[in-house]
Length: 79
Image (tube, rainbow, N blue to C red; front, side, top):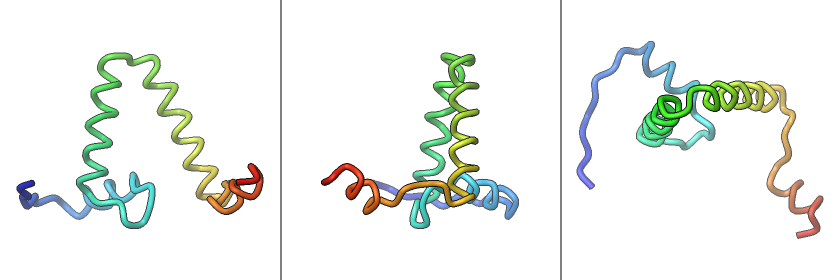
């Protein structure tokens, strides 16, 4: 796969960082995710607004530390 370099403002980079779901998520992954969300939003705006609301609520819960680790889920499910 060919790669290219993009020049972006620091503010744009900071904005992209806010969409990072895990520490090692690449900017390519973040941009692809945003493109996917944008396409869905154009096709189904009502559904998209509800999904965005749920994503924002989930992100707020995660920032507060209200989530289960993979190990906790395995223990709860007995896996």
